[in-house]
Image (cartoon, rainbow, N blue to C red; front, side, top):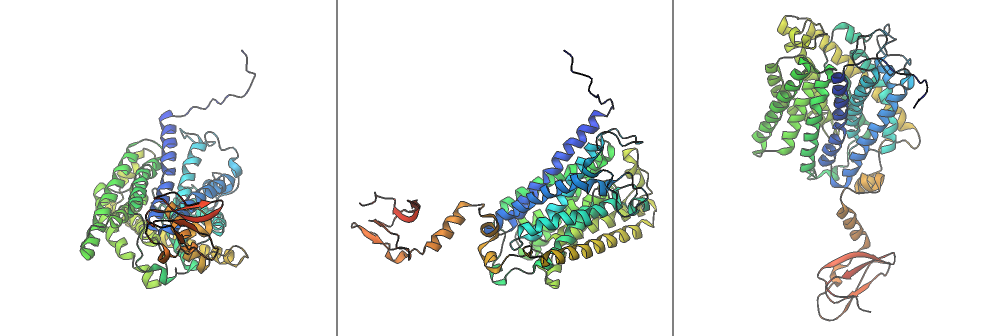
Length: 489
């Protein structure tokens, strides 16, 4: 049976490479819910669901931006003379299908574009954690779209696009120490400055509400991070496997180091501390896992665990409510990883992919690599901080787009104020119970039926025993029923 004379795509690709990129894309995206679980567990119960929502929605906004012009601005292959940002030649994924014209890639461009999209989604999800317990959600989504365009895309272009100044200068950043880790940390810290501190009276005896969820989120992140780093080789080769192992070593030593430091001061084995150290090790491995030696990663994990543990005190000195320690765990750890590229990067490791030539770092006597790495760090921090501050300032001045919720909303929690739903049903039941104004002094046990006084609405129910009181609704009105015997007529 004939099917017409439609166009047939005849380009040939390497099947294993395409599968590698598709699987890598899926697993890197899996890091997004991992961040949601992590942030939700670290927050208080009354704002747990809002952090999952804001992480997921930031990802959706990022995907739309990436489709419109994000990919074109970040990876334009027709703007090789531009050092700062790409052009709009690929707006709306125009002609983003098969191989890039003139390239010898063995995978279609759309597979590469999809893979890189997940990196921006992770970066935006990290930034979203800055809204914890006091940030309005819709203004943050507006911020995310503008931030992705004006901050993420340029910095991404600097280091990963062939025309970028950092790429051409020879800066080493394997999987995103600059455009993912430092960028998200600095942006989150600046955003926290504009939000201001949480109400001090609400922070008494503050602690994460669900450490199990923190552990789950960290485990999911670690799982996704393995492909985040190893799939950055864009093909299944020796360098990708080496990056895989480096990532695990750095995470392991980072987690052990942070946990030991916490035990030194608290004499307890902190699960949150263990998870924090693992994340620091993973972050440090992001820019370096495809460049440095295995023993370099071992040392890197220890150094990142120590430095980042003490860096959590920075927010207290600066009086900034960085509630999820984005600066310490992502920014400082990202800087550690970039510095380790200057110290332990080796030309023979970088060349494991069979396509990349680089002199490495001090380990292979390339002494000038250090100042290149430092200049790149300074440029990323400075540009991100200034532009993020300008975006926050302008958005906060627009009527209806104020970044922070009211004090009353903060006291109630973002789940109630911004979402209208709760991560845990009993939070809503307990809140309603107190709002109804139940007078427990008039709840007596006995054989005779007694009237139960209610709030000013005059709602009441009779019963003979106060044992087993159940909250329910009768005819649209709230009542207290005795569950031990039937209601009296």
